[in-house]
Image (cartoon, rainbow, N blue to C red; front, side, top):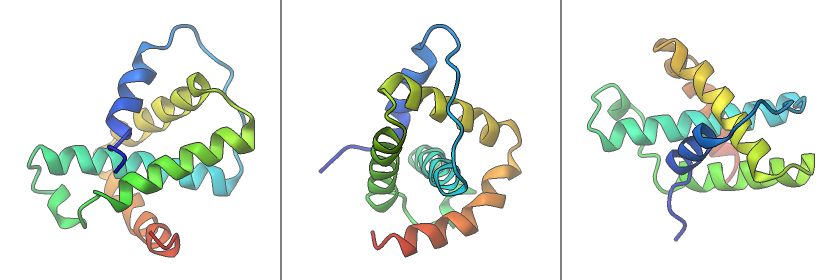
Amino acid sequence: MLTFLAPLALTLAQTTTGALPLPKLTLEQSSALRCSVAFGIVHRQQAEGDAAAAQYPAMAPRGQEFFVRATARLMDDLGADRETIMALVKSESADLLDTPERIDEVMPACLMMLDASGL
């Protein structure tokens, strides 16, 4: 089984040097990326015992697989390399972590997207 890549992706994104011009995403791509990162953040919070994150379903393994598939699809659709994808993940992470209630705002729609994915 694949390990959850969001924490790894966040770590790798922090090591990139230089600013990359980020590609413009479609609404579908942007939503998938946002939800992937949200699942990663909630997964990390759940692993740390965060009571607020416990209100959500366990992010392993469904959220993990969503992250893997969504980022792989982004790489294919955009013809992007890992560095570009990690920069997108880092940018989305910063946006979601900037305001604590932002996760709670996006999770209902993300959970619907997760259910619709069939995972």
